[in-house]
Length: 273
Ligand code: ARG
View 1 (tube, protein in one colour):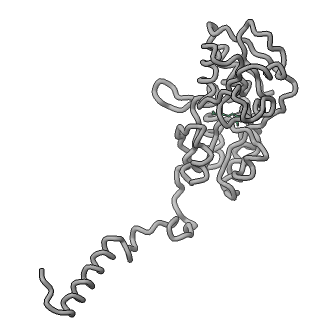
View 2 (view 1 turned 90 degrees about the horizontal axis):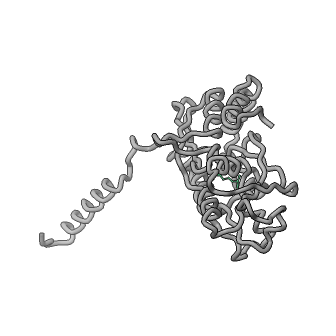
View 3 (view 1 turned 180 degrees about the vertical axis):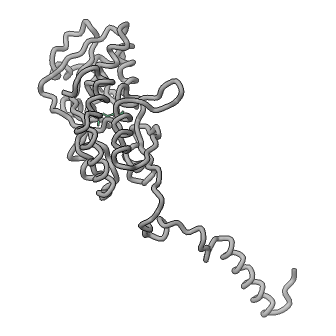
């Protein structure tokens, strides 16, 4: 269309602007969510909380043939949720992006055999500890390795960004090329079997379980009293005290009524240590 005078042009521009505003959603009211407007109404219906877990960590978290996420951590958090009156669903979340997913609000909680460390406390909050662990060395059955120090001259596999990675980094130097970092702990252990690394350092529960289920791998474990005790915690975004309070109350409740002990025994075959 050809505009013949200024008024017509102005009218057309105004109409165009109106359409553009309407399309861009300016003035849209009904769609506004409580989150978008900043304040959650007190009576909001309970939301299913999304829990991130790196489900390649048997017996703590793994995916069964049906695709369900199962394991000790899962049973613990399900029992905690029941006591705390919260609803949870588990979403497989690779370790490498897991803390970021929490930070971005894509996950409400993380349960993933996560060791509570001072460094992590800077960027997220943790529940009370729910499990004690320690690093453990896996080597080939004929390896001369007898203590952690002996790894100094070897190629060592770890899961990237774990506490195993951290301790090995201290021994060999963080940027040492002798440290081979893998996306998951099972991948590091497979590489040990293939001979690409001469040792793997990872959480004891996972190493013990892997060896028991791969008798043909020809592995043995070496423990070292120098490894500190690690405590697993459930992580929430920094400042989410109300949610962590509920989780802690749930943890307390399953400890006192014997549920925790039952879950522990069903996965580890012994009473909690
Ligand atoms: N406990 C170790 C850490 O916090 C390893 C945890 C790895 N967990 C997992 N599901 N992959 O660093």
